Length: 88
Image (cartoon, rainbow, N blue to C red; front, side, top):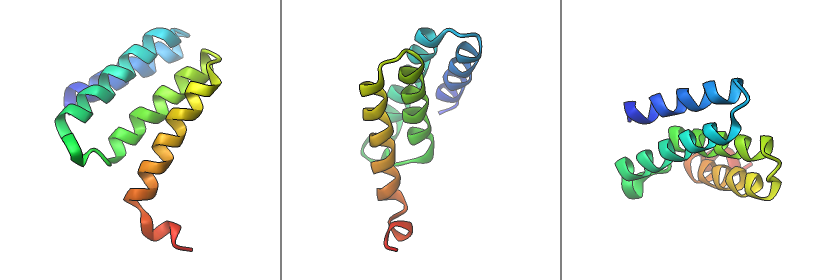
C-alpha cells in the first residue's frame, strides 16, 4: 500500500499544480493498486479516499457525471463500512 500512498501524493501535487489529467491518472493507478492488494476486502478508508480524489479530478475536468459516479461509489462503500452510523 505504500506505493499507492506515493501515487496519491503525486496526484495531490499534480492537482495543486493544475494538472488534473495527470492527477487523475495517479489516483486511478493508486486505486487499482489498492484494489489489487486488498481484493474482495477493499471496503477501506484508503480506497474511499482514492475514489474521492478521482471524483475531485473529474469535477476539475468538468466531467460531472463521472465525478458523481465516484462520489456515490465512495459513499456506498462508507455506508457498508459504518452501518451503525446510518441506522439513525
